[in-house]
Length: 167
Image (cartoon, rainbow, N blue to C red):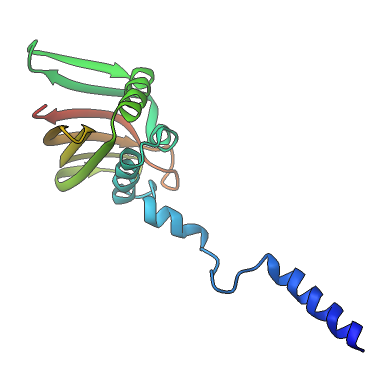
């Protein structure tokens, strides 16, 4: 009988080893809520900020449409500059690799309009770029996004982003 009890205890131990009762299972949707669900407008911008904060090019790439266009005014030259998705991904990867900290805060939405599959959002932002503790750059301004998706159940992706910052 003693051997039977010992076998039961061992079996119980083996079966419970893969389960930690003190660490309840995370719901699958918990990570999308915490890091932003790009199926919603607010969630899209949460995911965008998360990608910057954690310098996550994989996540960032899912937020950018294949035909994406980034544009900004080069104040030094007085001309509008734009590039496509490939350049955006390359430049963003370089940014993520060459800075210590990116602190992106989305401000209020100034203007928004659209449908369930195409949405325009203009909102303020503040970005601190820390190259090292003695070299921190700050930019703020407006960002004008055109978000698109094939169906209302798909995640939003940026078709265009016009940077209207002071940098």
